[in-house]
Image 1 (cartoon, rainbow, N blue to C red):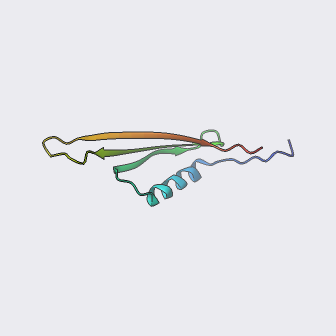
Image 2 (image 1 turned 120 degrees about the vertical axis):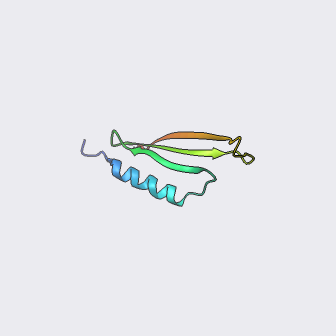
Image 3 (image 1 turned 90 degrees about the horizontal axis):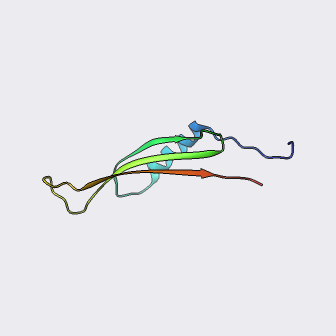
Length: 79
């Protein structure tokens, strides 16, 4: 349709935006890593980040840590 606006996401651009965001974001987590950032369909951005949370009170004999992995999906639709 000639009257329709169509925008395509590129996986490289999604990854670059995620890398920049993680570089600027403030957080109290350790070992933050970008696991995946891509657009498989050209319209949806999917980003997966992993990190480790350490309990405020822990010892070397009893380290309390929790690995965390989060995936977020974002999509904008223009009408």
